[in-house]
Amino acid sequence: MRDPDLRIAIVGAGIGGLSLALALRERGVRAEVFEQAAQLTEIGAAIALSANATREYARLGLLGELAAASTTPTELVYRHWQDGSRIAAHPVAEGGAYVDRFGAPYFGIHRADLQKTLSGAFDAEHLHLGCRLTDLVPERDSVVLEFANGRVERADVVVGADGVRSTVRRWVTGADDAVYSGTSAFRGIVPTENLPSLPDPHAIQFWMGPDAHLLHYAIGGAGELVNFFAVVEGPPIWLHDGTVAEVHEDVPVASFRGWHPAVPEMIRAAESPVRWGLFTVRPLLRWYRGRVVVLGDAAHGMLPHQGQGANTSIEDAFALAALVADARPGDDLEPAFSRYQTLRRARTRAVQRSSWVTSSLLHLPDGPAARMRDAKVARFPEDFGWIHEYDVQRALQASAPASR
Ligand SMILES: Cc1cc2nc3c(=O)[nH]c(=O)nc-3n(C[C@H](O)[C@H](O)[C@H](O)COP(=O)(O)OP(=O)(O)OC[C@H]3O[C@@H](n4cnc5c(N)ncnc54)[C@H](O)[C@@H]3O)c2cc1C
Image 1: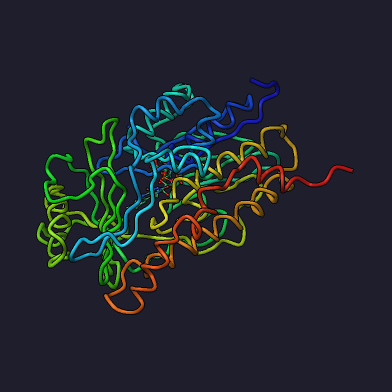
Image 2: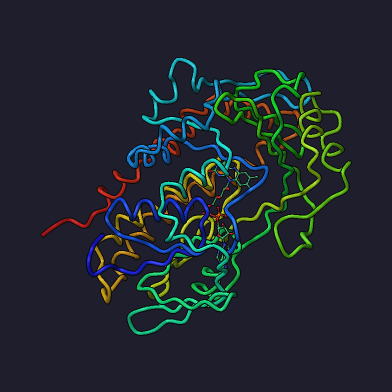
């Protein structure tokens, strides 16, 4: 590690925070990560990692371990909600189509497996669990971090990777910019063998219908589990302070009454009567204040319908690591943060917007608008390839100020 070290404090050991810690370590910079949870566990949730993220993990040498815990979908399939007909299909693993086109793999992985790989690659002594940040106090050349457990730390740079309800973002912007999207989701993980009605269980599939959709893909090294999330319109007003609410056990299945049998079968098999409110973050004008900067959901929480919340957080992490790694204690961070903000704001706003538009497209009733949507999803590689093609390192090079 370098001497003198820049003291970097990362708030949040989610996918963005851990990726940043590893990306910094690759560049010889050590970071301390502070996480509110007492343990790194998340039940019942998986992530689809696309080439824009896996190409960065490949550079860190993590691809083998991730591949062993993941399933690559055979195809991307869009289906009619009621009769289950295949509206469009694009090969992913089949014929190596995805890697050939985007240069890196596509993985369905349990979030806990991803966090295990990332935290396992990171030195445990620099991961501080049970530390919930409550406040930040700026000093001349540093920032003081205050935690709920009474701990106090000082750092040259603070990175808020603390998710969609970010405390750090509130400090940076002075407001809570999280917005309830008006949609919510039921999620679950089910053994593939419990889904006899499901066609193509190893594909990533969207079932699209009036006011709702269900997305699922296989996870686990042999595709033995299916992860799904089923999105519905409403409830109209989100009354809960957090992002999750318990509902009566009948509610998830009742929301998909009349759909193809594979859909209620999957939801019923998960036995998970929990509703997740889907929140987004209003586009931020500023991503930093003084020596404090945000990344991931804290900066640009988005709807999950392009499967890009985690992937763009990983992009942020590698971009920020490249831009701050050469800084020294006491340096003016404005040029690095400003370049990070310019680069990442444009990219993430485009993905955020696309995810928002996709939400309403997936929920159209049968009719002319749905037929136009069906024609659009048949062009997926042409219309959405820009999301997966993105290469952070190339984008950094292209945005580098011209040397004199
Ligand atoms: C239903 C659903 C499905 C999704 N599917 C996908 C997908 O397939 N692909 C994809 O790319 N994305 C997906 N996402 C989005 C993805 O989960 C998030 O975008 C991603 O996890 C963001 O990473 P992050 O590190 O910014 O935040 P998080 O992973 O949320 O991590 C934030 C961390 O900060 C901690 N924290 C919070 N506050 C504090 C505090 N005050 N002090 C200390 N620690 C704190 C939290 O405990 C947490 O560990 C999905 C999201 C949803 C809701």
